[in-house]
Length: 150
Image (cartoon, rainbow, N blue to C red; front, side, top):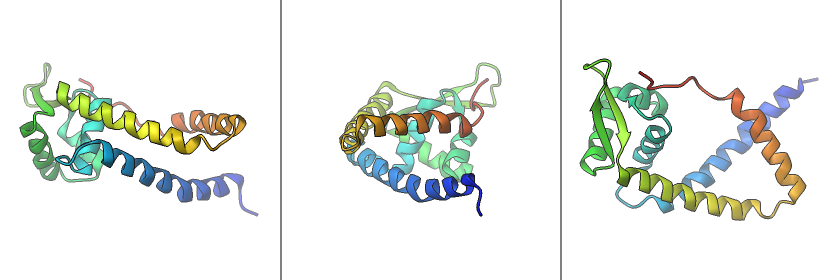
């Protein structure tokens, strides 16, 4: 007999990618035609981790530093990201969103969240409470240590 955690892991492996695909579709709709999904994911990462380094973004996206450097160059040219010299290490460059970058990420997230809420509206109040409880239980299990901190 398998352990309950094995069954739960199997269900997560089946369901989470479907949820993420639905979220990606919604984010794609709301972020504008000039930004690729990897660029949008980089923007969102930088928003959540201010002052992160290029290597932090590369690790998150699963890309090489040169690839992410080129990706970030495009975001800088579009005036969505600023590169800053670290206040503690002049060799370290940190990344931050511009006001325009913040606006794009926030608008896209707001739109995606509203559409996700519409999908979830078909659940009963008690079912929604179960989903919320599950999210609260899972969140601390999957939180990575802070990145980009000086």
